Image 1 (cartoon, one colour):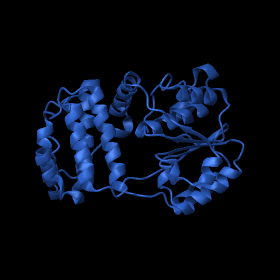
Image 2: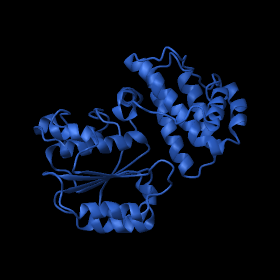
Image 3: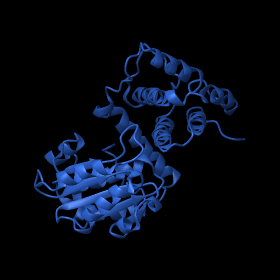
Length: 319
């Protein structure tokens, strides 16, 4: 989860929620819905930070108090998270039962406790029913922050017990500012600084990298896409490796662009791309993982990425 992004001014809905959570008037259960992808989850994390920050109201989230430091390190005792794991398609009832079991224990720290659940639309009906019982009788210190892509995939009884907010898309200027922050935070995030892809010498990795270089890293014009798409059509089994390679390349390009940490031993195929363009591509990679996990056809997933790379990295537009 990306922290350190300032969502103030992104939209009226964002500002209203920030004011409520900053002042202690937060609902015990909030369901955020919208098409903002990873940024929606980042905003839920921002609200969680607001709740847990121990600074004066006007300074929250301060980013420097002990509570904020533990939050950023992912070690805050009163923050509990649940969401899709890489390679999984659903959030199962066993996962939720583990969370509920932990909730039955006394909070590890004083103050509010935050239960952050992302990708609620991927939760099985059995798991949603189990979650419903907790939402009906929440403990006084507990605050649920839930996100979903489509509320129609969520039980109506859950929606009715939450403050439901559909986050609007921001105008291009505001989105550009936020995406630049998003790009910088991901590039410098300690949890991604040691991002690796496993044994570079393995045959599977060599083949995946060769395929990526002949397809994703070759497209520069829309006319290049059909040939690249043809190469990728039977590469479903290598899909996860290909997405890992794309993510690594994007992060390295962001580091070179934003942090001045270019690897002089390797020429990036996306050298010179703007941070905003790379942030858009990174967002597309995150979405591709979700589509693939949701059984969207691999060809469709690959084609969407090819169009995103061509449009963003090389600034191609339909004539």
